[in-house]
Length: 309
Image 1 (cartoon, one colour):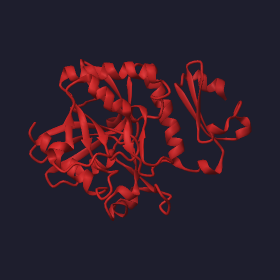
Image 2 (cartoon, rainbow, N blue to C red):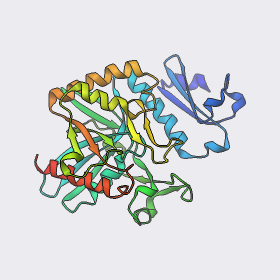
Image 3 (cartoon, helix red, strand yellow):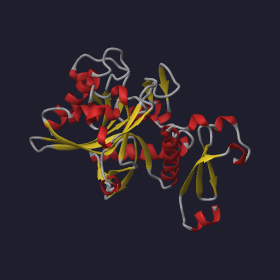
Image 4 (tube, one colour):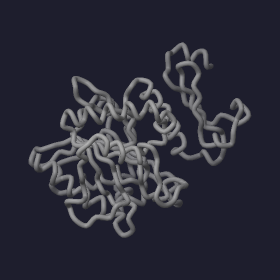
């Protein structure tokens, strides 16, 4: 009952499996999900179609609701992964990797976790989060307690190692996925200050460690790269080849581009002012022949940066 929902002061509601004939003025472009706004309430609807029997469509619509609400609140929604990387020598850093599906965000964190010099990687955000400013610092919040990872991008045998706590999705098809729990709710929603804010570039082939991670020297350059949202598609969506998506975030950011851009500029400015390192990490996940090695090399380079902190 929509009246009962409104009385509970919800910010957003997702309805999964609503018959097409019950969706007002239904359009075919809404077949995988649509978001309406009723006053201050966002309502996401996923039609009851056989092709929507896939968790990804539900997740996308839910995250779109989250991002639209965050934009209304003046926060910056971020399509990316974030973790606290702790080395065996005691040094640590919190890094956020921004990028669209298949950019190598989760895979880079997994590669870091497998480095001998790393004590542990505490994943706080796997795919979507938001930024806020508390006590003069940029902090991040997560949205999920489980990772929705491409099976093909994991090391051989990894999925079986976590089989007892994983959910496998369409393992016999392209873009097979596995859901693995990675953290608890309390830590995911705790504001966490960030040290690195890096765009995950999966398409640039590099051959030296000096090129694997670069830092921007101006807000304008950072905005240019993040806004372009370039990536080499890996079959995680219906797209192929080089694609662009505003801020690598098709879930709300592009629909509210004007408001989002002002918020993004504000947060990037604060990062530069407070010493957050803003740049780009070349994962090479979309470069033929480097699908597995690329994220390892990027992780190794990032480890060296943390080691020098």
